[in-house]
Structures are given as structure tokens and as C-alpha cells.
Amino acid sequence: MKITFLGGGNMANALIGGMLKQGIGAADISVIDPSADARVSLAATYAVSCVESAETLSGVGNLLVLAVKPQQMREAVAPLVGRLGDAVVVSIAAGLDMATLSRWLGGHRRIVRCMPNTPALIGAGITGLCALPEVSDDERAAADRLLRSVGTTVWITDEVRMDAVTALSGSGPAYVFMFIEALEQAAADLGFTPEQGRQLAIGTVQGAAALAAQSAEPASVLRERVTSKGGTTEAALGIMTKKGVGEGIVAGVKAAETRGRELGKLLGAI
Ligand SMILES: NC(=O)c1ccc[n+]([C@@H]2O[C@H](COP(=O)([O-])OP(=O)(O)OC[C@H]3O[C@@H](n4cnc5c(N)ncnc54)[C@H](OP(=O)(O)O)[C@@H]3O)[C@@H](O)[C@H]2O)c1
Picture 1: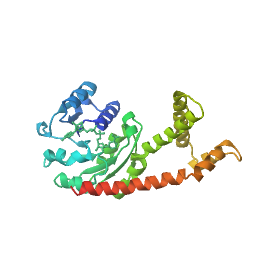
Picture 2: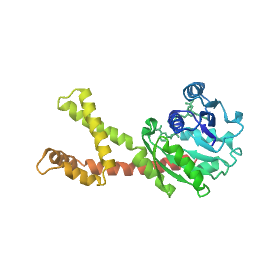
Picture 3: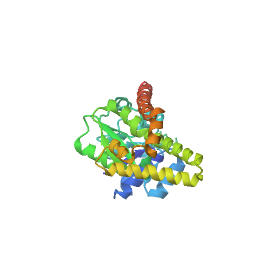
Picture 4: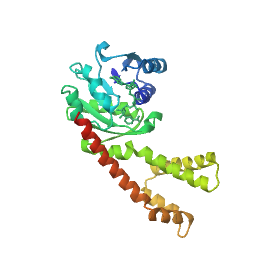
């Protein structure tokens, strides 16, 4: 399996690092990136072959991973039109729908669209994927293996749901960071040092997430178990509910989904 990356930035680095750890050979990976710094760094770190532009490649291989910014995409893919053969195009560009990509790729229809998130950079991402009907089961499996090298994957049948994936898990790390910030603020107000606050806040989020992941019980049951009548947790959750913390999160995620749809339309109109 030969894999070409268009764009050799943060996400390409994470994916290439993950793929090499899964046993894919560096000789099977090529990267196209106009930035000399990016090429030198990728070649030195992963021993993959790097080229400045698509024109110098004889072919893109079996998988072409589109890893440039959405606003760079149209110009970046133009040199590849008519040169894709049977390659499966795996796009990780946020917000860019497959119909637009297909149009920019001269009608190519073997496209998988993915929405990874930033924890992918440390191999702990979660990615939503969907594909056009022309992508076979084996080709889906190849795209799935690629994204599983940096975390877990969830397949979505209807592409329209990708804006919701973006709103939940794509933007989601920011919601969690905000929660950590608030815990750290509370820790500072209660007299802890910043380092103690950081340890207590992050340790709590990590531990609670790991417990929720391992438990067969829903989060609501785990929450109730920590909340004894008249106790400290109940006092905290009462105030948080009154302040609309839960409702604010649900409304925020829905606002992100709406914004994702608007931004997608703008991209598709280019
Ligand atoms: N970072 C994330 O956590 C994350 C999460 C989900 C989805 N994504 C998606 O992943 C994609 C890549 O994000 P990123 O954070 O890896 O971006 P990035 O670090 O900016 O990487 C993009 C790379 O593509 C290069 N590039 C620009 N024009 C090009 C062209 N014509 N041909 C080939 N390469 C070109 C850029 O070079 P220059 O720097 O010189 O422009 C840069 O090295 C984006 O579409 C983003 O929406 C990222």
C-alpha cells in the first residue's frame, strides 16, 4: 500500500508517526509540501520521501491523504486532477464536503471524509468518518486503519452528520480545556499553587474519563454514585445546574454544529 500526503503539517506528522508505529514502512509514504522546513523535518524524523510539488511525483499510490488547510485545498489539489487513477482520497480537512472535493478533483468519487481531533497529535484522537458509495469495504478499511493509527474511529452513514461530529469531538477538546481551566481557577481561589491546581484538575478529568470509558454504566449513574444526599458534590452540582452549566454545554455544541454548516456552505461556494 503506497500512501501520499498532500500537506506535511501537524496532522500529517501525527498520522505518519502513528502509521510507522503500526508497522507501515517509511518507503511506502510520500509527502508533498511546498515548505522546505516541513520537508526537511519530515524526512529527518520519519525517513519518508518528500517532494515540493505534485508534478514531480509519478503517481499518488493507493491512498492520497489531503492534509492541507481547507482554504488551501482547491489550489493544492489542482495539480492532481486527472492523475489519481484508482486512489482512495482521504480528506481530513474540516468542513469540506465530499461533493465539493469531488468537483475540485475533476469528478473523482473514491473519497473518504474524516474529522479527527487534536488529541490525535498524541495518538489519543477520535475520528468520525464517512465515504461516498463508490468506496469499497476494503478501501474503507484502509482509511479506517490510517485514522486508527492516531486513536479510535466512528463511521457515520450520512455526511450531513459530519457537522455534528465536528461540533462534538472536533471542537470537543476545547470544551474540556475550558472545564480544566475552570477547575484550575477554583483551585487557585481555594489557595492551591498553579501546579497543584493543574495536577488536581487534569488528574480528575483523566481519571473520570477513564472510569466512564471502562464502566458499563452511563455517565449519569456514575455521577449519581458520587453524589450523596446533603454532601459536597450535591452542593456543587446544585449550583452548577442553577448556573446552567449542562444546558450551556448542550447549547454550545448545537451552536458549533450550526456554525459548521455555515462554514461548510462558504467553502463549497468557492
Ligand atoms: N490540527 C488538528 O488538530 C486538526 C483536527 C481536525 C482536522 N484538521 C484538518 O487537518 C488539515 C491539516 O491541518 P494541520 O493542522 O496539519 O495544518 P498545517 O500544520 O498548517 O499543515 C498543512 C501543511 O500543508 C502545507 N501546504 C500548503 N499549501 C500546500 C500545497 N499547495 N500543497 C501541499 N502542501 C501545502 C502547509 O505549508 P505552509 O505552512 O507553508 O502553508 C503545511 O505544511 C486541515 O484541513 C484541518 O482542517 C486538523
